[in-house]
Length: 244
Ligand code: NAP
Image (cartoon, rainbow, N blue to C red; front, side, top):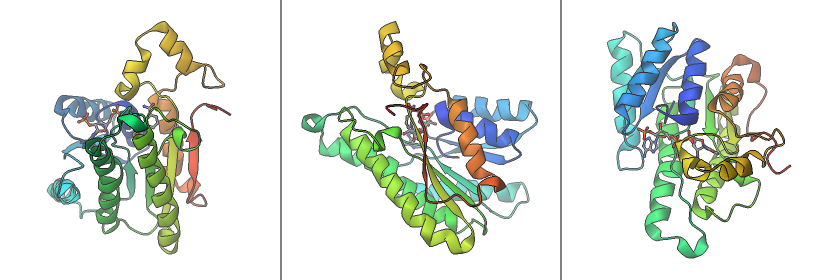
């Protein structure tokens, strides 16, 4: 579970652990936040361990899996990945005239390149019948020029999801993307600093509220479960009916 120390990732990690998964709580910098997630999972009878690796830098996927394998071996478990949730990502507000090569490099290296290689390496540990769930965004089905590069990166995630679903079908592995709308996390905290900002984001949903991580976690839990075995290659919108 990449990016599990905060926000949507934390919500998904806690839900998957409650459903019985042993969860690797991946994070980059927030060691204390990740430890808190692990503690909260253990306190409610689940099992998890922290896994720290910076994504978007050379050798990231190898570093992630060498720590992952080491922890499983320490527990006497042969390295195995039943469910991969590719959630870690960075955002960046920039309209076309504000885009720089550095911004493109940063967003694509974390949101696309790292996700691709974490998946490639993860597949060598995934048994038949495994699950891959990629976090996309509702702004891949609507125009959002305020974050053009971030939107593009999530478009790439959708495309990878579609391609891999066909590639991995013979192994019974499903690959789906979940596309949240505005969800209350650090990623969009700047847009929620005033009551007007909150009301504007809430008003985009037909339910007139901003999403919570648990709203997204339920859908991911379904896609991670045996009940979803006939669903693959899909981008499932989890935006509360944003811009219908
Ligand atoms: P968030 O609150 O900003 O949390 C991001 C998580 O990713 C953290 O656990 C962070 O770890 C990790 N991370 C970030 N950069 C990393 C890097 N370079 N290497 C390793 N880990 C890294 O994000 P969120 O809002 O929960 O978003 C989760 C996912 O949903 C993302 O894919 C995002 O694009 C998508 N999404 C979010 C929204 C929304 O409204 N929030 C809407 C649509 C889609 P540290 O804590 O260690 O930094």
